[in-house]
Amino acid sequence: MKKKILVVDDEVSLTHMIRRGLEAKGNYLVMEENSGRRAITAARSFRPDIVLLDVMMPDLDGGSVAAIFAEDDDLKHIPIVFLTAIVTKEETQPTGSVIGRHTFMAKPVNLDDLLTCIEDHLGAGR
Amino acid sequence: MNVIDSFVENWGNLRGGAAAIAIIAIAAFIASLGLLVHWTGGTAFAWLHLMYLPIVLSAALFRIPGGIAAALAAGLVIGPFMPLYVLEEIPQQTSNWMIRTGLFLLIGTFTGIIFTWLTAQFDSLKKAHEELSQSHIELRSAQMELIQAAKLESIGRLAAGVAHEVKNPLAIIQLGVNFLDTTLSCDQDLKEVLDEMDRAVKRADYIVKGLVDFSRSDELELKTQNLNPIIENALNLVGHELRKGQVTLETRLDTFISPVAADRNKIQQVFINLFMNAVQAMEGGGKLTVTTAQKELSRNDIALFSAMKQPFSVGSSAVMVEITDTGHGIPENKLDKLFDPFFTTKPVGKGTGLGLSISRKIIELHDAMIDIRNREEGGVVVKLLFKTNQGSAS
Ligand SMILES: Nc1ncnc2c1ncn2[C@@H]1O[C@H](COP(=O)(O)OP(=O)(O)OP(=O)(O)O)[C@@H](O)[C@H]1O
Ligand SMILES: [Mg+2]
Image (cartoon, rainbow over all chains, first blue to last red; front, side, top):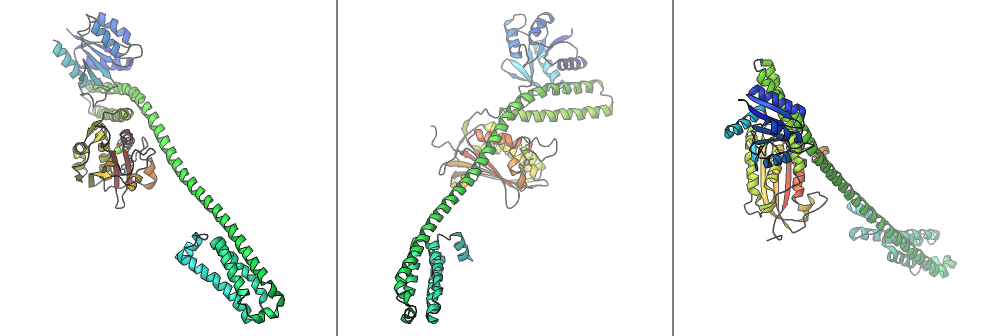
């Protein structure tokens, strides 16, 4: 079965681009969501294997989304990768670094690095 | 020449040789007027009116004492020392010589008073002028510092915002390029174009990183530590660039320098910036010299650094770091722009022009000082002054 990835970012073109890239490179089913609030309902119905989450979003920021995930029994096991501009490449590995409980990747991300990061998490989850 | 110069410069305040020459000249003038009258047997008596000239001159040069002395000398010449036959030929003068001497004294004293007053006025004007131009210079540099500070602050805020906003579009392009690369990998031309685009994104990302560094440079994690290892580490990090640029390295790090309160990463960033600037200024090779030394600050040491707030006082101890290169130096008219954000002379893609403005901000947050100037032998010397921890804390 295809692994499911939920991509959340208020920038529509960015989620488009991530979906295209991921679907072209790997055997994934990708869902895009462009608001923090809607990401939570989307996650409940879509049941992703991993979430790529932006931090700065206008309605509900990534940190709060992650906090809501952590309190929800259905969602708390889902790994979250933050794709964010607030960290720099010097502070994180190209393929993401674990800071606290989550993984952070610095924007702009490279598709190959993103795939490696996702595979790391999905592999570990199996 | 010297006497004339000091005469002109200190006309109201003669000393030494100049004073002696003036006194002799005035005395000679008075005496020769007396002799003139003497030799002409009194017929040139009218010339005695010229006597006022040396009196006024003497009063101008030596004030009231000068005026009085010259008046008395003139009085003696036309009085007791005037040969009697002269006085007999012009009898009315005989009874008048006391009056004449009195007039001389009056004029001498009066001129002396006037010149005392004038020079006082002149001196206070001169002093006011000096003070004014000094405070003008200070004001200007304070104003420059303020402009600089305001510029840096607003740029810092702007930078954080811009950096964040630019990263999303960059991410889109990056992923788009990666996507196209996967799907179109068969075509060689397209692949080259995509590589080109990939590099452009990396470059833009690098600049944005500079902006982020810049906007973040005001949070310090201070720890008391020795600067030498930080410098050595920074040198290691640029080691490759040094070799590539055929730059020889000389380090003279004083092992006995006191520790300073420093944010290791930020200070290292400063050194890397400075080393890279030096390397980039030495195209075709050169020599980089880095020294550290413990200093008891003299007035001259401090005067080297032009900062609005002077965190250092004479006699306090500090660590001085000097970074010297043998590069092309800095054109004089660019010296005051060095620390401006985005000021660079390097080709597009080579420099962001943020290196020194970030460095200066970091240095000022450390209560340290930085000075950059050309060396007479060519190249540039960068001096950094850090407060040592002695006295404060522990
Ligand atoms: N050691 C030096 N010798 C000669 N010129 C220098 C030296 N250091 C700095 N400069 C001049 O000052 C300018 C500004 O330096 P700064 O470090 O701020 O920016 P940059 O080096 O151009 O770019 P960046 O540091 O972002 O790569 C340089 O472009 C260069 O012209
Ligand atoms: Mg530089």
